Image (cartoon, rainbow over all chains, first blue to last red; front, side, top):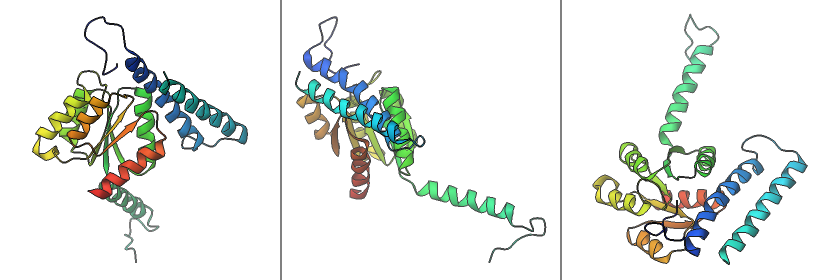
Length: 68
Length: 151
């Protein structure tokens, strides 16, 4: 839930949307990092590449969200 | 030299007891971090990371639960989201600062907000760091360790 959502049924602002998008994105990033750092078990080379792809795209999405 | 009893000629039991005591002593020296974050996946991920980095971790998924955990556990550091259900992070922070035992407990805010007013208010109430989501976990761990070293 956003901390900026206004009272009642008002439409969320851009700031609300930005905030709400960052929560799940942060969770995706945290999970990918745990996997990439092999904290949850070993990975092969290809699996490492896929995790790096997830993290690269988290960064891209973060930039896109910041520019909203 | 280890004193082995007649009933424990190989010292196996003594070793186990020794390990248990060592583990308990080691745990008691670890810093305790309270993670208050309502995204359950992020919360769980942070707990795994901080535990991996040799910290005791307590977690709460909403503001009220977080405040109760803070008073009960007296953590060394609080990692606090702002947009929390049941009690906003700023209100929680205010309650912490009103409690003499928790007034100086280091708080690190981890938030997705760009709202400068909220951030300024948190800083006025003495948060040590404001980290913006998403952020690499290494930066969170570093911030916690820095704050612990600052005392």
